[in-house]
Amino acid sequence: MTLSNDSLSQQLNISLDRVNRDLERIITYDQDLSSRSVVATSILDLIRAGGKRLRPLMVIVGSRFGESPENRDVYKLAAVCEFIHAASLIHDDILDEADTRRGQPALHRKVGTRTAVYVGNYITCRVIELLTEQDTELENYIQDLTSVTTTQLCLGEYQQMEQRYNFNITLEQYWEKTRNKTALLMAASLQAGARAGMADPKVAEALYQFGDQLGMAFQVRDDVLDYMQTADTLGKPAGADLRNGQVTLPAMIAMEDPFVREQLMQLTEDSPSEAFDEAVGLIRDCGALAKALDMSHEFMQKAWNISEELSHYCAHRDLQTLWRYFEERTY
Ligand code: FPP
Ligand code: MG
Picture 1 (cartoon, rainbow, N blue to C red):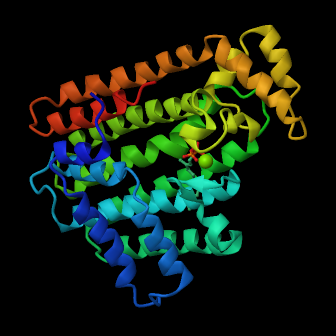
Picture 2: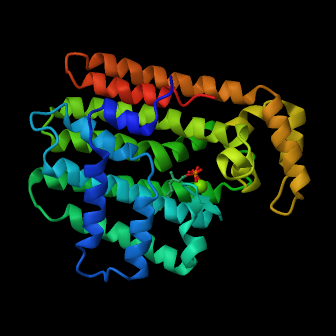
C-alpha cells in the first residue's frame, strides 16, 4: 500500500488544514503587503497549489519528543520551514529554467523572473522576521539553526551551479552538495521542532541525524527518479538534470564504465538533444539506477537504526511512519 500525503498527515494525526491556515495567515495578516499585490497573490497561489508539507510535518513530529509538544512556537516553526523550502524552490526553478512546479506553471513563468526573485527574497526575509519575534535563549538557538541551514541551502545550490557539466565531480562533492541543498533543512526541521517542544538536546541531535539520513536518501531517489520517469509523469523530460548540466549520482556511477564515461565527457551545453537522449539511455541501461537506489537504501537503514534507538519515546512510531512514507517512494 502506498500512502498518499493526506494519509501521511492522518497517520501522524496532524491537521494539514492548520498548517496551511497558518501559512496563509502569515501572508494575509502581513501589513506591508496589499492583498492584491503580485507578491501576496503569488505566495498564496503557491501555498494553495499544495505540496507535501514534509518539513512542517517533521517539525511537529520532532516536537512530540519533548515535554511541550505542538505548542504555538512549534506551528510557527513549521510555517517557517515550509516558507524556506518554498523560497528555495522559486529560486531553484529560475536557475533550472523549469516550466512547471507542483503541476502548475513555475512562478517565474507566470510573473517573470524579476518578480519571482523578489517574491523568493521577500519570503526569506519575512522568515527572519518571524524568527526574531521572541528573544529567549531557545529562540536564539533556533534562529542560528535556521539561518545556518538557509545559508547552506544557498551554498548547495551555488555548488550545483558551479559544478555544471563537471563530469569529474567526486562523490565527496556530490554528498556535500546533496546534504546542503536537501538534507540539512529536513534535519533542522526535526531538530528545531524537538528543541521548541522542549526535548532533551541529545534527542534533538539524534533527530537531526535521522533527518539528515532521510534527506540524503530522498535526494538520491529524486536524482534517480529524474532518469526513470517520462515527461508525462514527471512534468519534464527524463534526464532533465543531465540536460541541465547536472551530473548526479546515476551518471557518476554509470561513468565507472569507460565507454559511458567517454560518451558523457563529450556533452556540453551546446550538444544536440539527441546526444543527451543517447546519454540518458546509456545511464538507464547500465544498472546505475539500481546501484544508486542501493546507496539510498543505506541512508534509509541508518535512519531506521536511529529511530530504533529512540524506541523508548512514543513518538518514535511517528518517526517510523515518516520513514515508511519515504521508503515507499520506490520505483
Ligand atoms: C531542488 O532541487 C532545490 C533545492 C532542494 C534547494 C534550492 C536552493 C536554492 C535555490 C537556494 C536559495 C534558497 C533560499 C532560501 C532563498 P532539484 O532541482 O534537484 O529538485 P526539483 O526536481 O524539485 O526541482
Ligand atoms: Mg529543480
